Length: 415
Ligand SMILES: Cc1ncc(COP(=O)(O)O)c(C=O)c1O
Image (cartoon, rainbow, N blue to C red; front, side):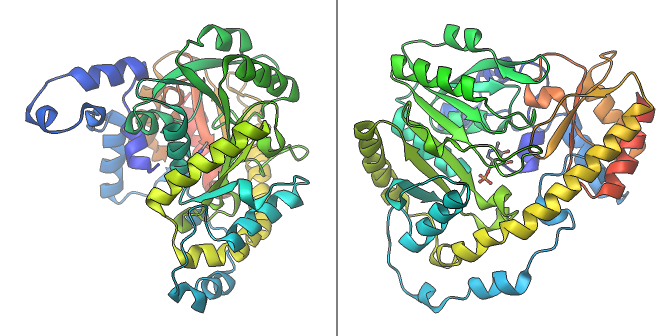
């Protein structure tokens, strides 16, 4: 999801604000358009201030950056450009699941993780967001519910609105690392709950779902006829040992999503996938229905699918650079935090972000505004990810290290 829309999210309790936005000030547009699109599209104060800053021409230290193509990483441009010029692109051979050669490249990616995924159980999509939509359409009637983690990535709200799905939040809690509050999760399940979404590792908390949690989620999902939906766009960015993918999970019907936007740092290429696993009969039925959904759109283009093996190979050099950057920025962060005792950071197991814990003496958004307007630093306040209250800031660990270091210095001097 693009920054401007994300930044336009309202402050405070997001769900309450969204409901308010959907009923506020009926006007002609509300008569003309479907109510699912009655979003509050007015930028909030921080988004407005960001636009203003951009037009001022002042140099911004962007510590929210998530676009890898703007972070100074080196790509093998000749190899990528060559791969995009395959003469076979001039032929149209539609396959609802995606070209077999491209699915084979994805299956090979999992084989390198030690996981066997059949090309028959893979469906290619233009983005992970599109994969989410396919799964939502497969599982949910209008008004059905899906459980999402909080804190979490704000993308889900809009995806759910577009697909007439109701999101219900389950809490994560931090106690020597992030964990799922499984008790609370069970309590929010209703007869309309169709599935549980996990982000592995989660954005922005950077924690992986643990094997004991997966075992419990399998039990819960099986007992309640629900599916597990695993977003693994950051799977390869573990700071410790490599973590297992959900593609091997058979304890419940499971949909695992990823794509090259993060894995290879190529969000502009629009190549993603979903893998289906689980009990055989359910898996077969899910794949057949998803194939029909995919056939309705046939949204992937031939050049990208033909280039998929090369684009996936790009991940190796990209991930080396990215992990070196994350490591350097975390070292810098810890060095600066050692000098500033009233600010800490939460443990991070993987992904591209760190969460700072600051004294909650004023709203996080006010601090973010001051940093932007007075110190030319942009970051995301915690409420943007639905943290429980003030006192949380999220910083990107993929920002160029010089910018990261200077931006952090300015942040800490404002606290
Ligand atoms: C957790 C998570 N899932 C999905 C996406 C979107 O991925 P895609 O570009 O494949 O739609 C993002 C993008 O930042 C993300 O953070």
